[in-house]
Image (tube, rainbow, N blue to C red; front, side, top):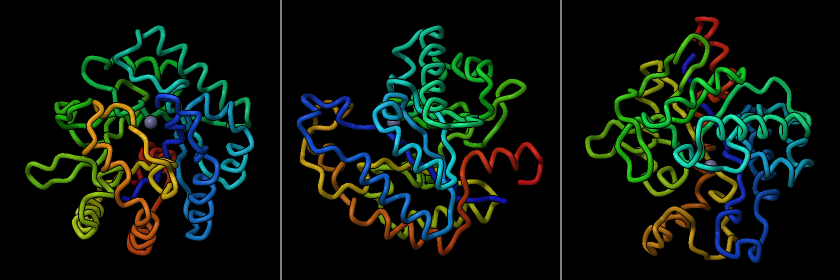
Amino acid sequence: MSSVLLSVDLEDVRDWVKDGYHYREGVVDNTRVYLKQFKQWGVTATFFVVGRVARRYPGLIGEIIEAGHELACHGDMHVQLDKLSPQEFRFDIEANLAALKEVGGKDICGFRAPTFSLTKQTAWAHEVLADLGLTYSSSVLPAKNPLYGWPAFGEDARKVGTRLWELPITLHEVPGLAVPIAGGVYFRVLPFLLTRWAIGRKIGRKQPVGTYFHPYDIDTAQERFMHPDLGEKKHLNLLMYIGRAKVLERLDILHRTFPFQSYGAYVNALEAGSS
Ligand SMILES: [Zn+2]
């Protein structure tokens, strides 16, 4: 069945911010807010967890497991793939897997590249992931993008090699708006009516809708600081703070309208040929 694939990229943005640890810790409380909501809605999500975040907050990862959600990899140190060699990437994912297993993670089969940095230039990563026993990746942004993107990959989920599925992040179909439908800044900033309409269209066509949220996406109390990867541009940084109070309200409306499931459950259904 086609669904909204619910996911949280579990990372601590302070790790990449200058003097980041002077700012208030926001990962634990905001993740618990997600957990409470997901429980209320009776939905299961995938948490793509950075290895060092798992080592820092083992109790929190235990709560996620206890609640029945899926754990998956998001890089051990959240390094974009173009900054790693294939061998370094392998070590990074091995460390990420070890960190998740150390805190109780079992049957980990998924990966999301930091900043959707899996592109044509780093296509070797799919082979490394398959070799490490993973069965899916949600790492490609199949459009041109100022940061990373792989337009030629195409927007449909497909198998890369014999074992690994790639589920590219779902994009709007409006001309000139090839950005993710339901993730991070785009979910917060674009008109919700457009988002809901776009999701409905995909689900109507039996296509899955990949989402991604972060602890900071709902952190309305976070201090103002320059977020990484924005080239120090103040107007872009402003977008990082817009619409945070509306994220859960919007997700609540979506969950009443569309079926939600985790990435792992969707991939299992794909494998079984029943999706
Ligand atoms: Zn990330």
